[in-house]
Length: 198
Image 1 (tube, rainbow, N blue to C red):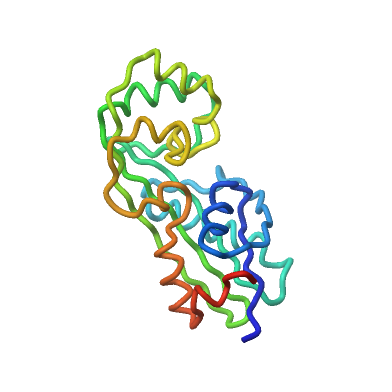
Image 2 (image 1 turned 90 degrees about the vertical axis):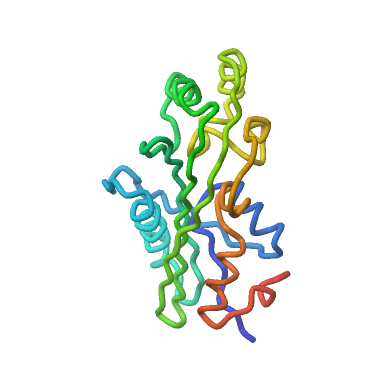
């Protein structure tokens, strides 16, 4: 089967690694979409809209491709958090998050240019944060890792030390839900294994 090119409309190293671990070598095409353009108070609507916008932004560069756009936010006590804008903001967030639970939403948009079809889904995972000290928070933020991540933590990095448990899809918290992607590909008539080693 002659497959379309699999394009990841994201510069996220974590998303690229997840795809590579799952056997898919994506063509990375950063969208540079300005996320602040979208003002939406519902977490699901927000991440799905952003994921779609990211995928659509790069679509004009291709004629035959499957383009995956993703976006994640963390909601804690009704507040939506993307990437923190400063170390001070990351510390303040962690002081609120510790000992609490949050919900990580990741929007997935898959554009199939060959079939002129678009699928949009949202992965939802509950995250339970450990009760950690001010010193630990300061040290973690000083590492720089929280400044690059939605929700101010990376489950696959140092942040994994401070997550007691999750309920739901593990890879969704890292940046994209692999089971959800597999289902979306199936819904478009592809088998995820077709993309192994391509």
